[in-house]
Length: 221
Image (tube, rainbow, N blue to C red; front, side, top):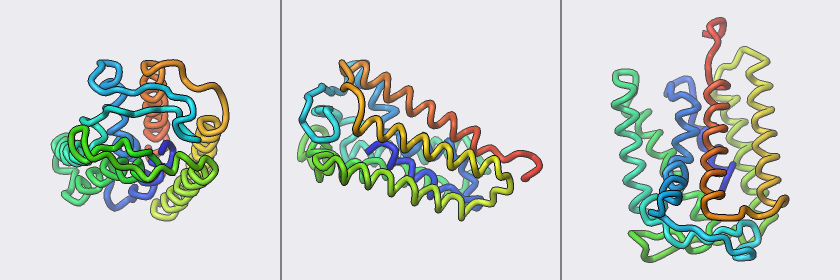
């Protein structure tokens, strides 16, 4: 799962919970934000095996710390705690819970598309439903989730500026184009380090865009 993760970020954002959109963008990809440096440091492992699935050439054969079920639960709880500490009195318990659920949603959505490479605990009992083996279906699911998330976001949040609304839609189109290129175009990445650096770059870029799009101009306040 790639841009489909952001459906949760868009859908979870509302005026009521006051969680910044960029925080939710980081939350839904937190496991991958951690995974990338873990790969670069040799703590977790990935190799490129063309044809291992119809959609992705990544053999994610060792990632017990970021993508095991237990690991995902731990990171989810830590994320909620950090959010509560950083935001202080501005962070309600319900908002912290939403952050935790956003983090954990990553594992649930990955479970749908991954081959059995998601461990329950440590590096054992690996699971995955394997939707990556059906390229067209997986692509459709990613895009459908993203579109639904954006529609929910636009309905739940009061956005008076036409420019901001257009910005959200344009960003959504950009995410779809990135997913299209990832799924259907281009050569596979050349090494585990390139995969990790590329992933980290995209996730940071997307969170940065969400930061600017999520800011409320004073005239809208």
